[in-house]
Length: 178
Image 1 (cartoon, rainbow, N blue to C red):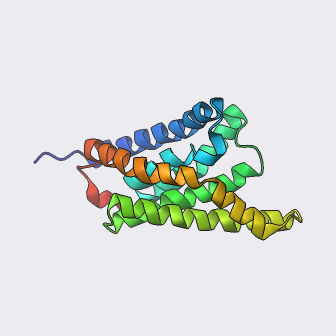
Image 2: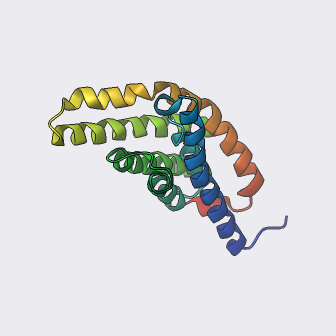
């Protein structure tokens, strides 16, 4: 069986991370254009896919960078949402990547990463609301509950897309995930 040199694999990872970062900017534009933005968590889907197909370092960087790149290019998400999103998306991607590296099935890694991301969202939103003198417990739960439809979409589509991307481009170097 022919294997690809490590340099080619590294280039593939950068290309995939860049593509998913770009998708994390474009997909929300499409969703917001038809009024389906916040509740469907459109930026989360490409970032979860990044976590399922990339090594954890690249996945975390993709999750951290995408909200800031989107904010600079499109003005969305606004502050302080960009701060919260960069934290929660880095957690989503990093945890998904580590779970896949631990050989969990894609659907299980997706479910656990989404649950962990929801905990991070609750915590970050609660702390920020408390800092601003707002009812922090309510704000945390509202932020998590508002994205429930998006979490369901992620559970259905992210493992399918990740399986397709993974089989197509990353199959030659599974040991590089760790």
